[in-house]
Length: 97
Image (cartoon, rainbow, N blue to C red; front, side, top):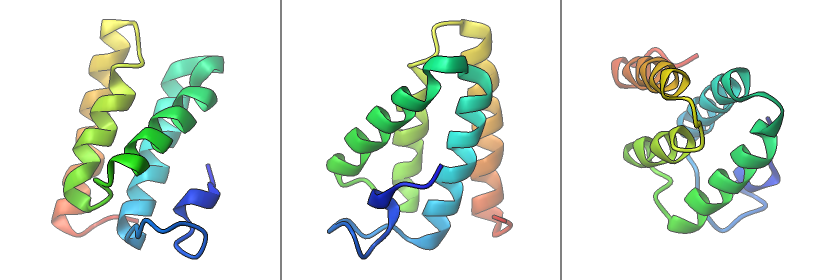
């Protein structure tokens, strides 16, 4: 999901390229698990996260948590959290693709 807000030339918020790649992976995961309401929820959460200013790698947990609470089904929420955590572990180990 490409957003104008992620483009550092369009926004005053600076988002590191590695953070952008993780957000794209987490968004894709959320959309896979959330169904048809997913795109509008992702965009709303992203905009709120962006405005919070927590756009560094350490702020990704806030973003993931905010997306997770959008999932009503506890089983789906747990799956999202576990898979998103693996994405973050790859970031920490230096293997973000």
